[in-house]
Image (tube, rainbow, N blue to C red; front, side, top):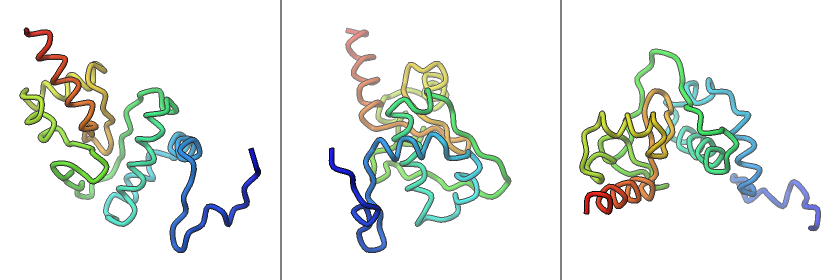
Length: 138
């Protein structure tokens, strides 16, 4: 593999990194960083995405990510641009109660990540969970 220069990753005001690098950054990012920047709509979604990549690649070991502080938490959209669902959107898609979604996430039956006290679930994981429930019921 050819060594790359730092400027190879810079594209105007953006930096494009390999997924493995993003996973490492997500794994070493202190939890407090998410809390500190949760009020920044230009930064927070990217930080959440970094943590999710780390979770995807096993760098976080499936651990929950939580924050501290008393500032108002952002309300997750029904579905974010990156396909993440909050508990309410996931429960509507799956057809179960919000507490059942949280319980499935806590028990690791439904892959999810807890960020600032809120569960985020990938839409594909919620659909797979729903389909699995449907096939077991049949």
